[in-house]
Length: 351
Image 1 (cartoon, rainbow, N blue to C red):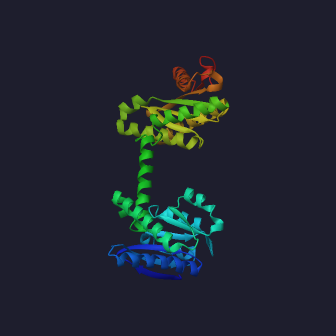
Image 2: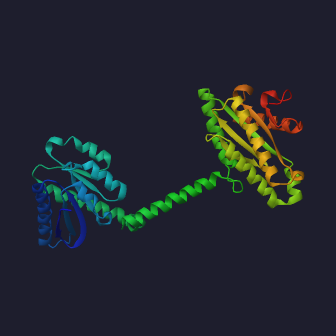
Image 3: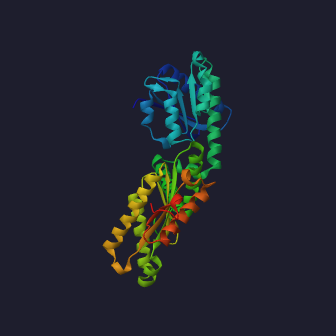
């Protein structure tokens, strides 16, 4: 890495200057040195400014972000542009101000730079001895104020490694909280709250755009007797088994949820009535096979499934779509030969 270091003042602040033109870099450093000399001459205690001059964005990308207090970059570099440097700083140390410098003929880029998040844009007109130190001191002062108002942020910004760890932990915690907020503890399916949110969203999508939408309500027949006979632990095993069967036999876009107790449901966007029925039959058969493989025949638990489709029963809202599926499910429970019933066929023919 090609770099030069210059130190002026009494209280250390590290200023990174990314400038491919050595003449311009020398002018910028000289202006800071002259300002420091003037202030020290009148007894002013000014921040110690350590200038590190780098020739390219590549050199800058190899520096330690924890050492940045202020970054100054030319609009055009030998291997890129100021916006590359600005984006890099914003991604790793958003608390660090960035000043972009440019020639008078590219002054139109100033507005774009400020919109992108640069703290200032300095046009190099040859008067840097006056304007540049003032701009540097202003940005450093603003950074100090922000640091004092946010001690935690200052601590996290001491090193890139600490910041990366904190961000990962935060994202993991948020993800865990989001999953917990929408997941049923026992079955790990969606809970009733998340189901309701997804149901309203899919209902609006279906009615607005004419997209097929089906809903499946499922009840475990014989569950109460099974639970009373073998205990709650075995009952919980059956509920978890039902959840695994739903998860394995539904489509990736379906929303499987525990509705409550021994009732489950599946929200099926983009599903025709025939497709919904096929999925329902597949779920019922798969659950029978799973139960038979694990438990004795006299402890048999099965599924009754009701299916509703908004294009068949014309429900007025999402709640009515659920109610139609619930009615179909109870119709299936009332006639043992019916394992799956479609809402429009209640009381007529088994699906």
